[in-house]
Length: 147
Ligand SMILES: Cc1cc2nc3c(=O)[nH]c(=O)nc-3n(C[C@H](O)[C@H](O)[C@H](O)COP(=O)(O)O)c2cc1C
Image (tube, rainbow, N blue to C red; front, side):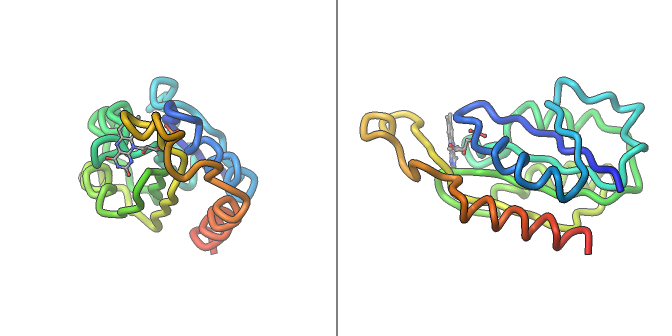
């Protein structure tokens, strides 16, 4: 099995930590949206899409990539890290991916360090996360989608 995870992780590298935990289980390569070669996507059995949540949605670079993808009959999963866990924020990316014929086989989200705006003045929220417990949950999620 061969997987690809497309990850934009810019605020504190939080989402990259989740991707790194899942990668060995999924035998996954990790790339940024700007590094995706659409002509090679057919080589992968499953494709993951992850970023922090920004103003209620995945990162703009991931949403823009989803718009540009060709139609593909393939399994995919969505993940995120965020200040306040709300899977509802996945809706925008999910709809774009489903419009490209991708089948979403699982979604994962966890709270993570957030110092946006005035939160930064108090050291942010969820400091220290994702922690080992979050990474273990991510590993369990990765196992569940390839069962
Ligand atoms: C500009 C900005 C906007 C954000 N908007 C949200 C939001 O709407 N909802 C939320 O739960 N977290 C929000 N966050 C927190 C990030 O989603 C969170 O810190 C995430 O873990 C960042 O992921 P990254 O380090 O992988 O980029 C925001 C952070 C920034 C910097």
